[in-house]
Amino acid sequence: MRPVRTRFAPSPTGFIHVGNIRTALFAWLLARKNDGQFILRIEDTDQNRQVDGSIEHIIKCLKALGLNYNAGPDQPGPDGPYRQSERLELYRSYADQLVAKGRAYADPYSKAELDEFRKAAASNHQPFLFRNHRPANPPVWEYGVTPLRFKSEPKAYHWQDQVMGQLSAGEEAVDDFILIKSDGYPTYNFAHIIDDFEMKISHIIRGQEFIASTPNYLNLYEALAIEPPLIATPPPVLGASGNKKLSKRDGAKDVLSYIEEGYLEPALINFIASLGWNDGTTQELYSVDQLIKAFSLERILKSGARFDERRLLWMNGTYIRNLNLEELTKRAEPFWPEEAGAYEPDYRRRVLVLVQERLKYFAELGELSRFFFVDLPLDPNLIANNAKLAALGSAMHKQLLTQTYTELSKSDFSVDDLTRRLNALLESSGQPAGILFSLIRIASTQAPASPPLAESLEVIGKERSLARLKQQIDAL
Image (cartoon, rainbow, N blue to C red):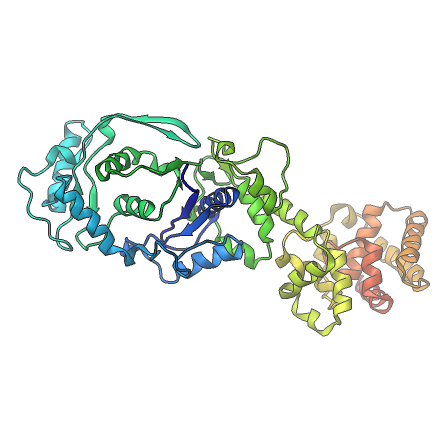
């Protein structure tokens, strides 16, 4: 049993979404579960697709979620460097070994010639295999000038996937593929095998799009006399519709944007881990330590997991409700509406305790709390859009609010006294709570929803609450 050593190896081609970060999370959990190591490696051999700032963004995403790595581009380790573009000489040395063994050759064909080979295969209703067009006398390979292609030895393969089980492919799945491009950079198909070996990676966790290429990789492992790592292929994370893979093109959000919107890191980790994995119980909420303890590759499901943002909202809201006041106050600080800065911290804490139950993510704090800090303009649509309330007519609205103003003028504005007087208004007006309290809520907050009415009025205060009621009455 080799020590557990996993890696996350993204390409720096843009932001990281949930499907990407789940691969990192599974690798991180496996390493932590087994007291192993987790490596960040940047696979930047395709220079044309690289996006400026992507590497820094990847690092920021991992650190924001607490997925700390033992070695990476910004954290030196014994097997570095951890950017493939800085390891070119290593790949060249392995390529030279394959050339010396007769297992690699210079590819002399132009793109036009390759296109002709493909057209001929298609016209004969046959799959295109490059090995059927190997040059009889290939030229001497010139590094950085001519592509280098692997000389395969086709055979059938059977291999064990730690998630998908026993997989197999016939010899038709094995072909000659490019190892080093004409620009001197290796392909993914070559570089990741060398890097995983040099970095002593024990487990590869990657997407199902690589299953079809695995026979080629196994053939190359044999040519290099390298023992393959264990392979684990989780199912894809599916979009909200559940019928195709979650992707940036379908609106998948950057992981970091969730952090910036005030989602809690433990909630995000809990949610992402549950996409295609469970420990066989009905438990839904886990601490990070509980996830580490419970995680195993055997419990990853074989079918795709649908991304359900409503479940993420529920889960994050649950985590927010479980925060103590000190942590809640700290987390909320960047999200207060601008007007809150004029108020004392104690007042803001009182507001925060009230809205905590409704918060699903902290970026909602401004919308849910602004009426506590500023008198919002009257919004007639709030009444008009409430069908039952609108049906009463403005004359009845004015009558009910006038009764409310008179009764609340006598209150000391403690929660107990407000509750008693509001309940008395229900009896005297003959209106149900859903009608009367909605009307009072709209008049006193100009917001479509608020925390419990008596508690909200107490925090807003007597003078301001009565002034708002009077303003609504006058408007009616």
